Length: 252
Image: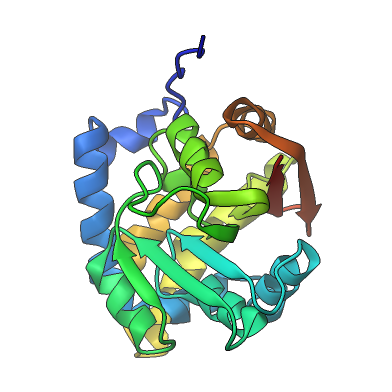
């Protein structure tokens, strides 16, 4: 007998979030609108947020966790394709890549960089068949998932036996001073620098939301528990620079 899924969001109840939405329907509509608006300037702002990591870090994380030439990859919440591009380079011409995201504006930017199959959709309902891919990736978008149980169950479903999941995320630092510095960097410095570069100025509200969702994100232990609950084995979490987390697991 199957155990019923317990609904688990990636964000805790937090009064700061009421300024953005009141329920899941509003959250999806609001985030899609913000991402669509910010899409042309997203990469510029992300590079300022990366704190010295960036493309090399994404590529190394995917490689270290087993993405190789000839594999098939699904990049969930692909956005403008920052992780997708790294994955596409690793799997090479013999591999296959799908990029899933609910924002048509972000996917339009992705298609300017790399020729992969793009799908408008959410992590909780992936329109792909069972056992299709060797690897599922997700970059800095776990906080935008409304139901971790459904999302992780979908990740497991589309993976082949032995396939792996790798979720990169920015987490709340351990110490208060570091928390304040990170919030100031993301919520104030990045939008100002993005505007000064004159590339695009429509990232301010999205990056304010980023800062609030980092503060409201659930604890890493709950994310690991949700991965195990979905059926993943060898579940683990590593931390770089005290901020960047990598959640990994394998389909038995």
